[in-house]
Length: 134
Image (cartoon, rainbow, N blue to C red):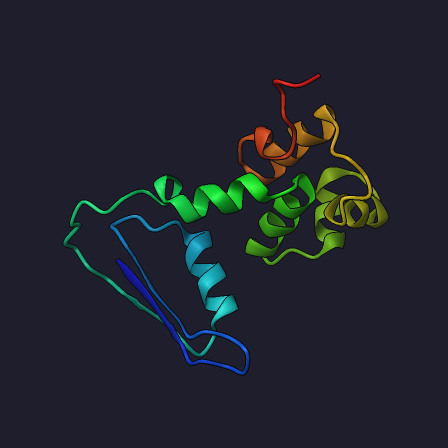
């Protein structure tokens, strides 16, 4: 599968152009690209996997991931699933205000909340809480 984005240059910006190539591009990546660049994404099926590098191994991904706060991660994961704060709050069993404060980094993510987030998003809870630090 091949996902290509060519976004024309807008005022005070550089043009965007990149490709994501591989057999098993995660659906959330395609959803994100299609929502971020609705007029510019082309998705093509390509049975030829040319040994491309995993997304997690790219330097820009590592840099972005390292600079993300737990609140940023929650907001990104929620956005990738097109859930509202209300929907996430219901799934977590907390108030919408609680979710909003987490996403704005006003309320820290506890160990217990990180585990809940991991279950709800079906991801590793360490994206929201550093279990090595106490």
